[in-house]
Image: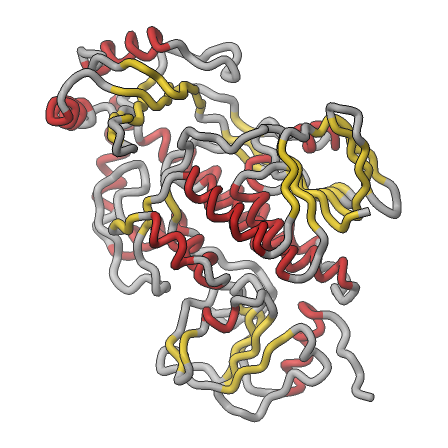
Length: 478
């Protein structure tokens, strides 16, 4: 019996597998597809996900493949620059196709010891007090202590659990694909610029050196079954309707359709089975938050599930996954639903869009919206009053390097500027680093493995409470 079976080898599942392996947990990843996807769904990483990669020593790999772009223009495609002095050392977006992200995360997961089994489709799931039994399409039965469904918006794991997935149905549909065009790039750029003056759900842009283009165009209506991809002729008809030309598109590599539904699982946990990523929430792709949200789900859950398996998790630690991540996803659903409304060509929506654009000229409004989309504004309610508690801690320059370099192992960290504190009793779970930073104006911070601040202070007795809350009972000396 393995420790954890992760269902789905997308970014969420791969990130979770690596996080678990970092703590020595046995992991098997099941993926129904026999080969990695060759088409590109998501196009980049936002600041908080970039921080996540940096905290695990992976950012160099991603920067070598991707391209950095300035922040701004992400809320409903309203062209406003990012506010100054965002609370991150990575105030940019990293343009990188999802295919590359999945390749890099696969390499990382395998390097740390995760097993990935392709062509393994889950069709059954039963659990008891000791573990979970999963059944595959070929009749194979596997046993694990826990299962995490990272298997997408149509998640079989969620359906087998009987977890409700309430929300708003699709009202507008968009066609998406990768194909070649038959007109010069200059012609494409000129027509797209003109169309996007009024139709912001439209776009054509090169995505590969061999001439492939990503095509996004509004559909004629809402299809009865979005699992059935559109035909090339359907795409051509909609291109002509929106732009007056079909750009001579041909040789499609991939065609799909997506809607603007917003849905969220009522529960993220049923016994020994968890949901993460699109299995737990779906929303329009506006703002590019979906992949990022899933990766951050995995980053939150991984260390907590590993603690439970290792035997030191305090009461309630596993339940804090849903308590913390469910409100974050609910907020993303609201943000993306609002953004979709502001992309409408209807007069009322255009009027509201103009007003929101004016409001975004105020720094506080612009900052609030960009922090939502990049997840830099996420603050978990940990019941503490200090402004830092519950928030991510940005990378800090220390006398002996950088803060994020100290988080590569996935352990907790006490950054102690006083030199008077101790993690005795928790040293097997929490690193104690005495150092100073001109960027940090508090005596000491206790940082969880996911980079969020659990405590700020300077009193040893006061420190024991958050240590026990997040890292379990101390190990007595002797």
